Length: 90
Image (tube, rainbow, N blue to C red):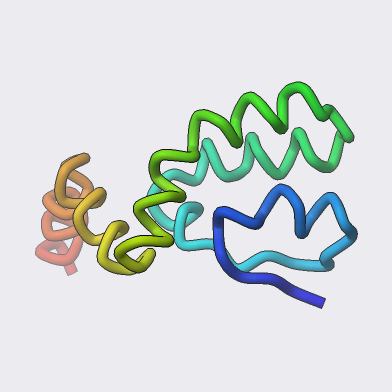
C-alpha cells in the first residue's frame, strides 16, 4: 500500500508502506532519499534528525498545500529557471 503526504513519510514507511508519493522528492530529491534511506536502515536517530530539519517545510505543506509550497520553493531555489533553459533546448 502506498502513502502520500510528505510530513507522514517517516511514519508510513517505518510502518511498512510499500510506496510513497512525494512532492518533496520532486524538488529536493537528495533530502527525500536520505530520509527514506534512514528509515530503510532502521536508523531512528538519523530519521528523526532529517525529519526535524524538514518540519518547517512540512508545516507549510499542511497549512498551504504542498503544490503551492513546492511551486514557491522551486522558484526560490532557482530551479524554475533551470527547467526553462532545459525546455528551450528542445
